[in-house]
Image (tube, rainbow, N blue to C red):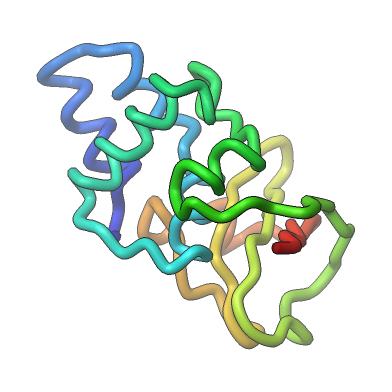
Amino acid sequence: MNQPQILAEELNKVFPNPKLEAIGKFSCCVLTLMWYLGIDQSDIDAIKTVASLIDTRALDGECTVYWFPAVEALTGRKLKNVSEQPITSIKKIKGKAIVKFQNGSQFHWGGVENGKVVFDSRGKSKTIAEGKPVLIKVLEF
């Protein structure tokens, strides 16, 4: 995946559709989850996967992730627990992590690995570039 949110926005301009609009605006969390789980798809296939998760109600119509059904739908594995922990820095993160960034009133989820942002579903979002990390999602299998 490179910039699936940007592609969804562009497709929605040509083929207006509520799912494409939602994916373009709000799918950063589920796309980062897919990255975290090792699901590497083309941008168009990622958009199709997110649309199918909306259809099966693993996400709501604005791409809010229902963690347990989403992970099971994507991997067939069952989660034991999902929690959030506040953070102020990504430097000490070892391995892969799903991190929420904030820049003013804007939020965006990104993938962090070994202290560096390595996945951004928008390519280079201003929220990640200029914002600060505020939460980390912890998934227990």
